[in-house]
Image 1 (spheres, rainbow, N blue to C red):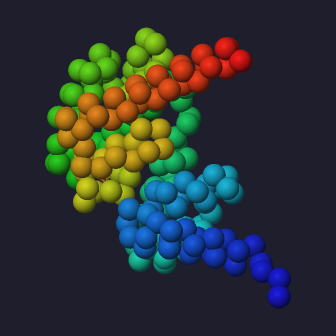
Image 2 (tube, rainbow, N blue to C red):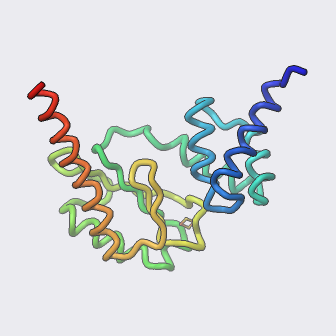
Image 3 (cartoon, rainbow, N blue to C red):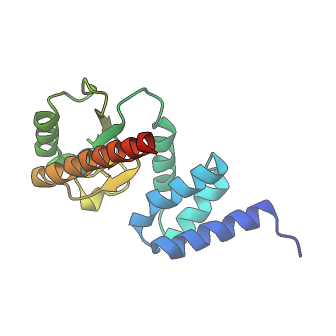
Amino acid sequence: MLMTGRERLAGEIQALAEKYGKQHSALIPIVQEIKQKYRQVDSFAMQIIADQLGIHPVEVYSVVSFYAFLGSQAQGKYIIRLCRTISCDMQGKDRVMRQLENDLGIKFGETTKDGKFSLEWANCMGMCDQGPALLVNEKLHTRVTPEKVHEILEECRRSFGVHATEQKEVHLV
Ligand code: FES
């Protein structure tokens, strides 16, 4: 029997929920994968995601709307978005903000002169119980501390080094 588009989509979401674990932290990766494949997450998909994770569809909707906003502004190679909604605010988002601004030498809303990092504010990402939460491009970090900010930035800088080496090797061939 032929599967309808909706059945196929529901099956894919179910497989993703099994892959990422049927818990709240699976929400962002599932939304990302569905968005990447279908270029949108429609109301049917939102309902299925909510059912699979046992959460309210409004929570899925808020993450989907947030992702619709991503990519709408031109920024650096690494776009760091820190959640400023109330739970993350109460869990120390200001300390994380100050550390990011100090380490990068820019304010939120700005991009470093070398075009490598941008700092942006974000709204709730659905990780309120694990705040402060931030995204580096599409990678989510939770329970971020000032110390963790150093590690996150180092990880980004290391990847610049890797890219530089790769480019060098291409020139040598
Ligand atoms: S308040 Fe920051 S993730 Fe929800």
